[in-house]
Image (cartoon, rainbow, N blue to C red; front, side):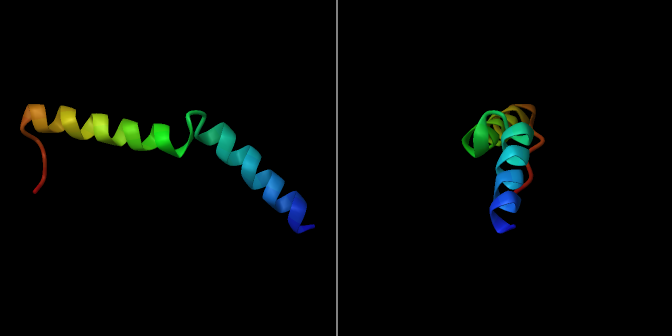
Length: 43
């Protein structure tokens, strides 16, 4: 049954993060750069 659980996690993560975790990190970094440019960055 754990094999089905791991498969479901894989499918869920693939659908939720289509660009993967690396894409999520790039998006966060991009948002941080935009906030710094606007002067809204938190120390």
